[in-house]
Image (cartoon, rainbow, N blue to C red; front, top):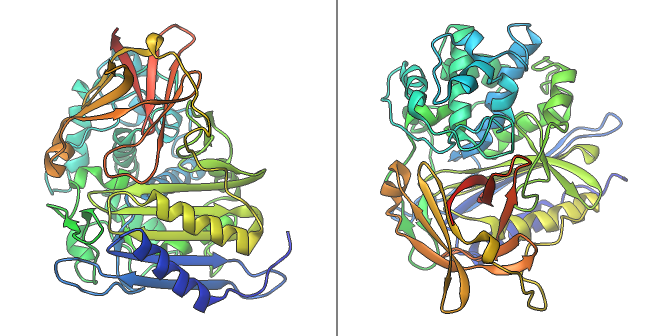
Length: 465
């Protein structure tokens, strides 16, 4: 892959502003990093457009900070792998050996759950528990104690299902081993050696900078989110606030085998490679990636291997992709709840221009209608905070989603019914309310016979027909 001409900063500044406005997003920030080759300096470009808060009109800038949401999981995973490098524990160490007080809903899972299961989202612990355990330094300790009543959505290691709860548990593992808080561990082990100046984990730290406010919807009349952030107990799963410049310094370390820009060894080359390497399959290979590493998800872009992560908080969405073979990383932060169409338009253009690499074809409805029998999939699928009902209404298959719990209460979620459009056997498309894009809904069964619906990166077990 040849090294293209220098970044056309004027073009990307203009094009980014055009696309953000086109998609009705109040404000956004973009960063592009390309590693220098043959002794050349790295190229780093950042730009911002729009406003941080539709109510105040404060302009977005390249120094503004944004919630990067679940991209934080890769940072938490990096610290976990530092501890593996130090011999403090191994990937196959049972978590209960590190946290003897751990009690989960099923005793066998308590005994056998490993660090690897948590890093790869294969634990089966209900993943969307957002219990507010307070603002104290003991918030993760209290959160983990509450997992004793958490549901087990699938057998340990049996399938893949996105799990925020598992990363809060990993945060507590970090605390127990380092003897400090997750927040302090990240500052010491990542923020400082990477030279980050605008990256924080606590809201009072973020408030020092101009900071983005979330919006539940954009367009001509944006709806500002009711609160700024999630409870502190969600920190290791998604509470880092940063700039594209700082996020790309973190990405650069992963592109460069674990070395910071000044040559400081942050993570071993072996652990850096393991994080990006294949660890487990994803049942649904369209929405995020085709497989999972340790923290990163993995994407097949027309035969080229990319890694990355997305982040969503209350009214903010972020995207990070790395193409290691080209030494390129791209980071986007937005202050709207869903920005996948912007991501697709922008990243398709950037990676085609800078690396000659095409993203996979978009997930869209078949050109010709496909008749897929919905009968085997009818019924109720349920996990702790979500009920998914597959029904036939007026002769059409539909998916009715009812969300409960703290986040649903904050966002004012109501039950939502959408058509299920057949794509292929066991695969349907659904277009949620307010979305510009279709999302995949995959039905599948485990080898042991249990039936699951996979939607929004979560595996939801079938409870009744």
